[in-house]
Length: 63
Ligand SMILES: Cc1cc2nc3c(=O)[nH]c(=O)nc-3n(C[C@H](O)[C@H](O)[C@H](O)COP(=O)(O)OP(=O)(O)OC[C@H]3O[C@@H](n4cnc5c(N)ncnc54)[C@H](O)[C@@H]3O)c2cc1C
Image (cartoon, rainbow, N blue to C red; front, side):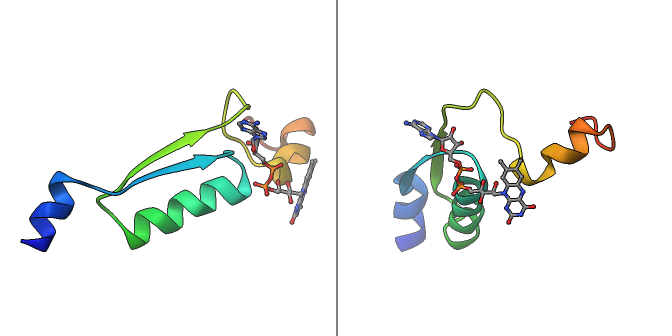
């Protein structure tokens, strides 16, 4: 019964920011609460790792 209620009324989470903290928060929430609805809002147009920017700039990665 508890599982059915959770399925019908999943927890909803809103994460502001889609970088290291935001993505890890989403991964952790998904692991702890697999049925939840997660919305991520970010100023960035795409999700990327700042730590990997140097690899993109020097051509070692394409994206
Ligand atoms: C070039 C570069 C290389 C780096 N290399 C390394 C490394 O090798 N190792 C390492 O440990 N760290 C590195 N860092 C630091 C690492 O990127 C930061 O510590 C990490 O990005 C912090 O993550 P964060 O999610 O806390 O914040 P941020 O990365 O600052 O992300 C904040 C997020 O919130 C969003 N946001 C902000 N304001 C709003 C708003 N008002 N509304 C909606 N969304 C908003 C932004 O768009 C962004 O998605 C590097 C940083 C840079 C710039």
